[in-house]
Amino acid sequence: MTRLVSPTTPALSVVIPCYNEAACLDVLHARVSGAARAAVGDDYEILLINDGSRDDSWPVMQRLAAADPRLVVINLSRNHGHQLALTAGLDLCSGAQILIIDADLQDPPELLTDMRAAMASQGADVVYAVRRKREGETLFKKATAAAFYRLLDRVTDTAIPLDTGDFRLMSRRALDAFLSMPEQARFIRGMVAWVGFKQIPFPYDRAERHAGETNYPLSKMIRLAFDAVTGFSTAPLRFASHLGLALTGASLLLFLYIAVGFFSGSAVAGWTSTMLVVVLLGAFQMFVLGMIGEYLGRLYVESKRRPLYIVGDVVGPIQGRATLGYRAEEPVGESNVTIETPGDNGTRPTR
Ligand code: UDP
Ligand code: MG
Image (cartoon, rainbow, N blue to C red):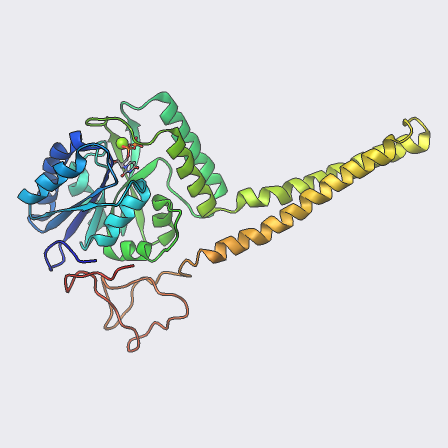
């Protein structure tokens, strides 16, 4: 894949996935350009990813790009969904800092300056925006979102920040670490949290959509929730073994009750043996199913082939922005590591 922008690495990339956002694009382009210019002067790029829109988004993007050399527009083959469209943009951008933002201007791009200041003053790698208020969203959306984030927090091992979308500013090394995760089912805000480094919250008030309507109907929200829970937790699989264990305990108590009935002669003939079979078999089946679930869960975790760890700083010749995520089996040293510096020669390796 060839890069579409200047061969030098910009200070800032703004990555924006767009699905049916034609009515937002002009204002979006103006406001994001203004915010980027205020932050880094002319040293930025904006990437718009058209995620198979069914409206005029793509022609509008092409028109905007023709007039602005800092705008890169990417057209996906079809609608891949928000998380994959965003991944495409993150793969193709080359900035030293990366701002992720929605196309509908619910997240004000003007916060960029303050987010950069927070990143610099606190030495953070990720500044994630936390929603204080959500204007113009239905009670249902707010309630389901709140419930979802809290459920997620309970079942996952990775601490995923509450009430946080994908609106965030990232350093290049945090982004490269993120891009080293190959999984298909992507829950980006969780994956970024998994990467580690210093990540700080940035409270803000979420505005209403500039135009159009939400592209996250209930069905997509449910799919995202499943990706989030299954991508970061095997708790649902473990559920069967816990249930099996509880049932086994309960069936032992029942067993006593049945035995008392049998020996005191108060039980109906045949009831004892039937109950015994039903209760014990049910409990054992559930327990064995749970055991299988435990193995399946581990298999699943392994099959994701995530990098085992992400190296932070390296002192020596490969210091700095080029620090990528290494696999454990690759030796990290001064001499035997070759580093690709994305953007320096105007190309990025195709994944
Ligand atoms: N989006 C996308 N592909 C989709 C759905 C949404 O690229 O299939 C984009 C959309 O254009 C917007 C962002 O993802 O920039 C968030 O979507 P939306 O505003 O509809 O979600 P909400 O803010 O209502 O959760
Ligand atoms: Mg929105």
